[in-house]
Image 1: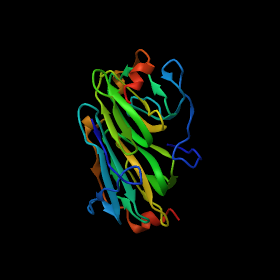
Image 2 (image 1 turned 180 degrees about the vertical axis):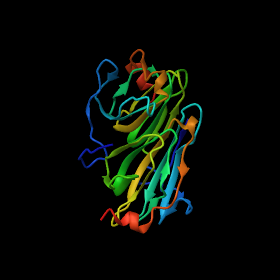
Image 3 (image 1 turned 90 degrees about the vertical axis):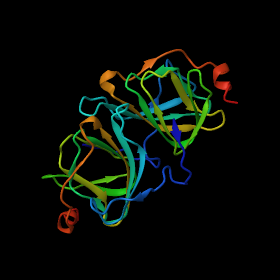
Image 4 (image 1 turned 120 degrees about the horizontal axis):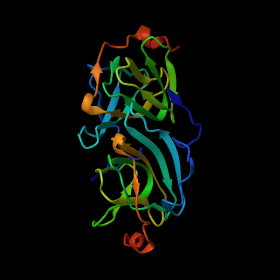
Length: 136
Length: 136
């Protein structure tokens, strides 16, 4: 089974990410829906500069493959990490974290949620400007 | 946890794929090793024009995200499909298949083996030139 987009970037930008779970402008292109055949969900997410998702957890973990730009990743209680094109981020199950673009550059990643028979995501509170600006 | 390559392409080309399981020249860059934390294995594979892997199966399935070029994908008993940048291929568990570059162009994909608690890959016989040339 295959699906074929047609753009100059590898994957289309997709639709606006839901404002309830994202601050700023982000875009999501679903690539693989949840199924018991694969037990993963794959999406292509683009964060415009300054955009980030809420604090959240994944009951079965998630892996990020950063495909373009520069962004941030933070696990609760730890410093913000700068992430960029080519980085692979392994997020264990139930770790409270967020990810997004940097202040000055957009960031695009492929997100692979794993062990989705346990669930996909649990959304928490917004990442405030104060929290986001600690990356400076 | 993150790992950082440094190249102009998103991921490095990696090392030569094992000649035992590949015909022609292919390259593999491991991105995520197997673990019971995620139950996936992720690799970045580049096939030079004419290169392909052997017939094989995945006990837990595999998903291919084609990131560059043009190639072929075939399930046993079905016609060869042309695949290209932006295509997403979902390979169910235990389906005998192969993938590789086209005759004239290289092909690069991210390969996500899923449900790896059941195993990762079972290699079978080579894809002969006669089989490969049926794509013409």
